[in-house]
Each structure stands twice: as structure tokens, then as C-alpha cells.
Length: 415
Image 1 (spheres, rainbow, N blue to C red):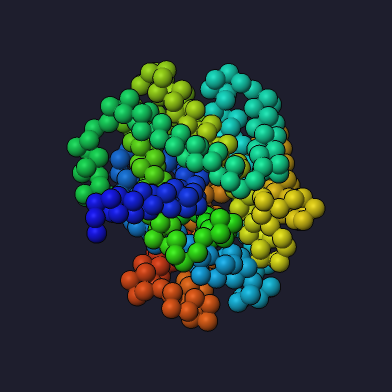
Image 2 (cartoon, helix red, strand yellow):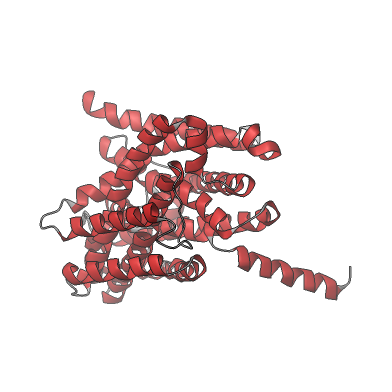
């Protein structure tokens, strides 16, 4: 093959990848939402670099799970919720999705808490920031289309890398970071288990599986696009874990070494100012703001997608309101409820944030069991069923998550 032909083929592949780019990176980036940033910040402030090692197995599992979702979406042309309803029945589907819906209302509330908290760092009242952001996000989804929204989401994804800057300003101890990763440590108590389940629950959130599969379908990807979709997934998962890593590092290298405890991401941004400078504090707060807007858009959208799919309603932001009324009413209702809760005086925001992540971690095994059974069904997937190594990692993840959740429930009883 001549150089000119090889060069033309290379550019063609790049163009194809850029056209397919989106679902993996967006799904991964939304994972670093306000609840995730809070969870990572608390982990860094309390345990320093100790829990950084949890991001390595989380990354491996995240890639495996997202690949399963994309493959199912490409092969079947159906969303995960749709497949669960068809194969598990309406009753089972109803109970699974009631739990997921409640968790996602909590997650959406957390996103607006992130908007409120980040803007308060800049002196803007939540009574201004939350309604304005909620309205703009609603307009983007209801009046926009998938291609336009996807471009906005990709810009938001890149913006999250500012946490790298914030972490470097804290002058982290790289030798300690290396030791923490090479020689994993863990305090075996109720608090540490809550944080670990929270990290897993926010790094591999249940709603992500539904959104990933739906977005692959919405984009119209086919099996010929699979290799580029896989690259998109790996890039997205890498970005997710890199951002999480630097959030933990930022708080570990500043707050933990000074013995400063925090309850939410806003506290981390405020506490960073006297330790790493005003710029570091503002970068952290602005990152929280971007992540919160991003996730306040995607989370209710993902929830509306999978609930409508599960019960056979039309769904998709390329559809008009009259063509998918249930989808838009549900999306609007979740957005409105999340914003109203944040605007209520004395709302238990910290409890909502942390418990929404813990619920994610507890619900995740249920979703994964459904996924693994479906992706191994030859009637559904044909020749594209899981390979043995994928099943080993998938079932091991389910077993570990169930073990952690049961241990967390039993610890208070054996004290």
C-alpha cells in the first residue's frame, strides 16, 4: 500500500472516530458530577491518598461495563430498560425502576446543590443561580437537538480537566501517592466502607448503563462502528478516573495534611483558598459548577430515557413534545423537583448527597446482574455474547459490591 493511500485511510479513520465520538466520553465525564466530586473530596480529606488504589479496579470495571452497554445497544438497537422489560417482565421492571428513579431524584438534587454551592463561593445566591441554571438546562434539552446538545456536552467534558490544575497547586507528595497505589491500605470500619461504596457507586453509577446504551442508539451507531466506539469508551473512562484522581489528590495534599474535615465539595473549595491560594479555590469551585450543570442536564435526561423505555413510551431529545409527552413531562418533573428541594430552607443537602451515592452502590449489582444475563443471551446478542474474561470481571464486580453492601449493613449490629 502506498504512502498516499495509507495517509488517506488514516485521515478517513480519524474522521470516522470524530463522527462517532461522544457517548463514551460524555457518559464518563458526567460521572464526575457534584455527588462524585463531593465523594472524592471527602475521601481525600479524611483518608488522604489511602483510597486512590480504588480507582484502578474501578477503571477496569468501568471500561468492561460500558463496552457491554455499547455492544448491546449496537447489536440490538434497543435500550437496556427496554431489554429488561422484555425479558424480566413488567413487575420486576417496575420495582427496579422505582428504586432507580428515587436514587436519580436524589442525584439530580445533588447536582443543583453543586450549582448552589459553587456559585456561593463567587458570592451568587442559590435563589438566583439554581432557577437560572435549571431554566437554561431545560431549554437546551426541550428546544435543542441531539447533535447540538452533544457538542455542548463535549465542551463541558474538557472543562473538567481544570481539576488537574487545582491539584497541582496543592503541591502533592508524589512519592506518597505512589506508595498508596502500589501498597493499598484500607481502614475496616463503617465510615471507610461507606466512602468506598460511595466511590464505586459514583464511578460506576447505575444510571450510566442506561444512558450509554440509549445514547449509542440515539447516535445511530452500527456494528461497523464498534472499534471506534470502544476507543471513545476507553478515552471517556480514562478521563473519568483521571479527574477523580486529581480531586482526591487536591483534597489529600491540602485538607488532609492540615486535619481539615469537610461535608461537601463547596467546603473543599473554600478550604483550599488559605492553603493553596484563591486561584486554586476558584478553579475547584468553577469545576464543580461546570460538572453540576453538565450532570443536571444528563441525569434527568438519562432517567427520563430509561423509565420511558422500560414502559414502552416514546423517548429522545430529537422528538417533539407532542411526539414524546411522557418523556418531556418526566424530564421536567425531575428537574423541577431537584431545584425546588435545593431552594427549601434547611434541606438536608449533605445527607442527600452522600446517601444518593451509597444507594447507587447498592443498586448497581441489581443492574449489573440484569446486564450480564442479557448480554450472554444468544437469542438477543447472537455471536456477540460476552467472552469468558468479561463474564469473570462482571460477576466478580457483582460479588464484591454485594459483599461490601452486606458488610456495611451488618457492621452496626456487630459493634
